[in-house]
Image 1 (spheres, rainbow, N blue to C red):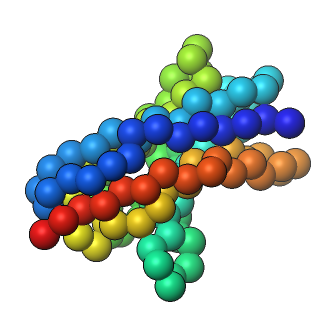
Image 2: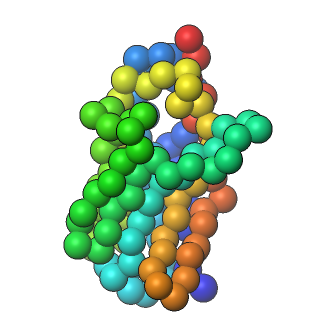
Length: 115
């Protein structure tokens, strides 16, 4: 079974930047889609950004022009560059790997943005 390990979360002031990374194990990484979701306390888990196996990206409206998702198939890794962070970006961020046959989630990493 594939495993996902996130890193890069932490505490940052509003306006700052963080870079989240997700390392994936298992085979066929290049043929799966990858994404980042986030969940704030008391709220549902929502999509932040995704990237398909062909490199097509999709973003939540709230993060467009601030966040960038990218993947490195040679390293089995996906990253989320987060700029101009806002307090409302505070949440646990989860990496996800999926295709028509499976969906795998990471354990999550906390991002806290102070005002």
